[in-house]
Image 1: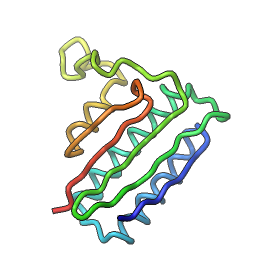
Image 2: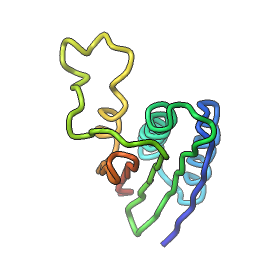
Image 3: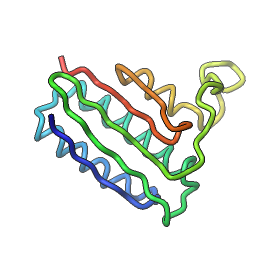
Image 4: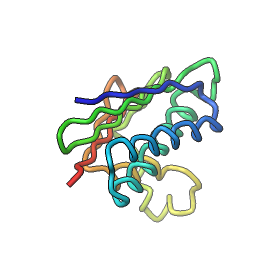
Length: 133
């Protein structure tokens, strides 16, 4: 079992470090392009949400990203230091009244690009799982 992690201050420009982290994982674990693309979008989306919504763009608060590799499953865990949110009652981004809104698609994207999405600790933690074959 392999585990790697990174912790970043809550600044949107730090997404570049997350992208490098995912690029390194692609090389290290020989991820194919399809899964790599899904991981890149879903994980950066989760980290963006943690920075903006979880930690309210407060650079004194950190976002932790860890990667866990088990056989043919790769799991990313994103954790912020915010208060969490009610992930049971999210507006549907595909509903007509929400189509024009600039936000609200992050979790929708994560659910469509990951094989499994699990929220923990009142929404402060999201785990994204991807099967590698």
